[in-house]
Length: 405
Image (cartoon, rainbow, N blue to C red):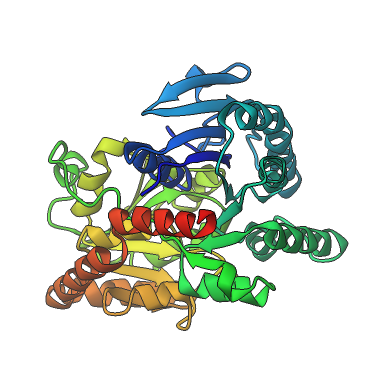
């Protein structure tokens, strides 16, 4: 395999513990370990708290991290990320990353420019760097942020929504290769006009597939032998976590079932207010990365809620870790969605927003531990076959060589 020079432009990067950041970082680190030279132009870490990590305050900073030259760019971070504020957030990163990307391009002389959406608004910066260097542009879509913003009400339909969709279409057309993380999302790219021969699948992977044995959460949180339904991750609009609280309310008479929510995000305080008075719900902060394996293995069941309208606009990156824990997952999604396909035999799906259906499914598995165990075995099998990091990195290298041959 030829050793290549890659310019990466992306908002989210380490040390952000969840979301897109760990996968962008993991991919770049794996490629550097294989001998490729990489300069990453990224944002300052803020996710999922929507608060700047204090030790990264300041202006543009460049350092070597795990064999990668990383330039961190300052940008606006809204404490309450409404639609307009999110737009300003992404625009500020696009503006600040331009001079850093230009400097990196001149210094690196890249063979390939690779960028990730979100943030789609920064993709024109990457496109310009690719044109200037006369090299291919690879756009990787982690989720369709315009569609998700429309579905969750962060962006209104009408002139603004139409303009955003047109912008998305132009950016997709500018890339030499567009990759995404699931088959239904690939189909959505085709529906948006991207030629099939320019589309690739580039999955995320399970990065917390083993329990570390550092912490016993069941003992620490005094949950004894109760059946634990766990949600861990971001707490924002598109997660639709209200339905979990309502399901807990439906099951409030089941002392043997307990709901645990670990996470941060703009909706956390409101969710805590909704859960007041429910003895079967506990909220905790997002756990350190080194303890996530123990956390996921302590659960009996994982919860993966999504709001109505987000079908196939994203495939939650946390799913790989949930499957790799060997526990079943209940998702709120359409039965013909990509998420439902991933969970075939490894969990169950109920309609988005249907708290009664979610409560019924949780109770059914709590009453049948054998069925729960069988679904967990299937989850492990799916994780091994579809969520392997080595397979993902190999696929990236193969596609890169096709582009550069």
